[in-house]
Image (cartoon, rainbow, N blue to C red; front, side):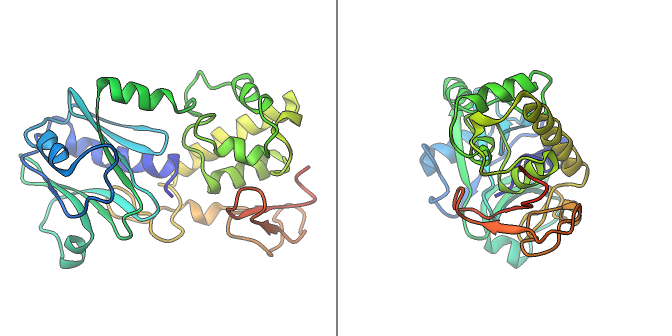
Length: 274
């Protein structure tokens, strides 16, 4: 699933083309991506609305339409692109939501396996939705102490807490693996047992790696594409994710992979992470 850097990249790419534009109409090919909104309400809500802002919250791309907000979570195979030309047959085939704009361009949410979600929320609904998500790790208010408070309340594995969107917004499996390795923290260690020094190192590495991934337009392992349809480049800089069985680039020890922590692949170095 696209994480914070991928969605941030998408938002930065599509924002200039959408600001101030009016959505002339909208078309939806499948209802199974909708959450808490009917097809009729979604399409009526989008038609004639003006895009006032485009921003990211956690792993969501959000279009501020004035009284409503379209919230897109791309999932593993979703993408948001503003097209300046007619769609190809392949692009039309997987275009779940199409929204022609008043300048002739078209906003398209494409999702091959339809694993993403679309929500249309009013002001109160958005406030409730956003308030259930934890702090943004790249904001100034996110401090080592704030991270430590979340970790100190849980006996779960630290990797699970870092990935829990109620505690920290936008960090998923790829960047949790990378940050824990860079900080030298065992991903299976109970979060409550981390020290203040662990908090400082992990906080610093989460922020450093997220910024680096944004600078590289995100990580493309398979399906992710930027808001211009390109692949990300951070996969070239991954030190542990996807490298199970390969030598650690710090000490040469064979990297271990396990699904025991949270059912997703966790790759780590026994020697470098304690």
